[in-house]
Image: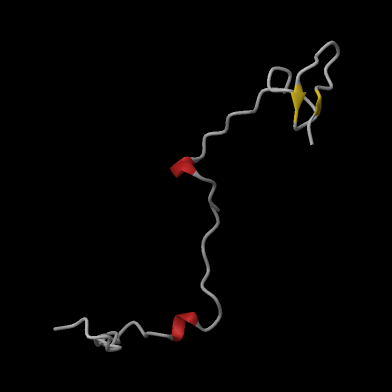
Length: 72
């Protein structure tokens, strides 16, 4: 809903409390790699480490076809 800017002597219609001219400036924050990330060491969920042992090689993945007459 449109309303009049809350700043004294301003008659601009706005969606928020203040219009763009009277809105306080936004603090500019520069994040490494473009976004915030956690600096703490990542931990795997319980049981995730036992999926593949260090001395084991993972099994090769096979191809699966669901039909549809797309492979020729």
